[in-house]
Image (cartoon, rainbow, N blue to C red):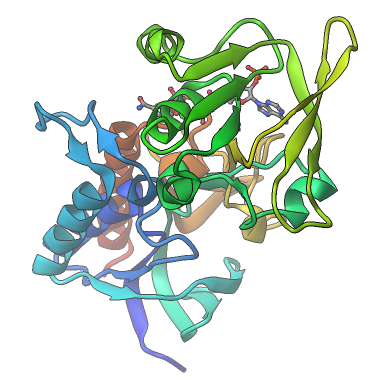
Length: 315
Ligand code: NDP
């Protein structure tokens, strides 16, 4: 059997890396399995203006890089890999990963959340050919082009504003006429000369599947039912995220939207009863706040619970 670790952290976003800093500093030599999106959501964002301690803001990838270095300095080990299967009923807990079998006394699930898609076949067919969920990754390819962004929250505003650096025009499409976005972000989008907001508007189809490039969008007004075509060369989705918790279904209690249920302020997981040694933190268990700083905070809390758990179990 492989060596048993004191703790393994699934995910290398803000929560996972904070958990890594704390558990490494406690001498637990955490192994961080970096997951499908190393660095998590911050690694594909631009300027983070609300992380305390950075009065002028800090670029998301730089913040993540700093956290990683900080965790490594105290002995955290990083592996580029992801989870195939997990057995939480055996102790030590058994993980089947892309880098082999791992046994661990405790597990910190910090697998975060991933971008949501509309689910249209034409959208799926054109991902990477003009359809994207990551403005910072793909915006560069849309220089002087006309594009659309879907969504009414802060992500959509942030994407639309960022994309004005490249695109000649950004049309922001939202399915309602009330916005979830914070006032400051919405006001910035409204004030921008190259952003046009269209409300009560949904995308029925992305045009251009045969040409293998986005040629436009078939739109529908949700109030009048009126159909129209918007000629754009790119479509960006800013419609929120899905928690990366599917692999725990059947072994942990998930809520209706798939988020891992945790006990407030303890981050213990459940499956009818408390699941020993398994903790969750960050966006995979947070449907409410989903901020870098709250993800970091819960990562710290989960790490402290791990320390306490190991101590109580004589390790
Ligand atoms: P939100 O859940 O806040 O917003 C998602 C938006 O997408 C909503 O307007 C929703 O519409 C729309 N939407 C969802 N599904 C669909 C669909 N199938 N078709 C069309 N529209 C859809 O997610 P965000 O990612 O924007 O934000 C998440 C959290 O992260 C928030 O707390 C936000 O404040 C924060 N954030 C902060 C940033 C910053 O401060 N710089 C940047 C980005 C995010 P509807 O309103 O009708 O439900």
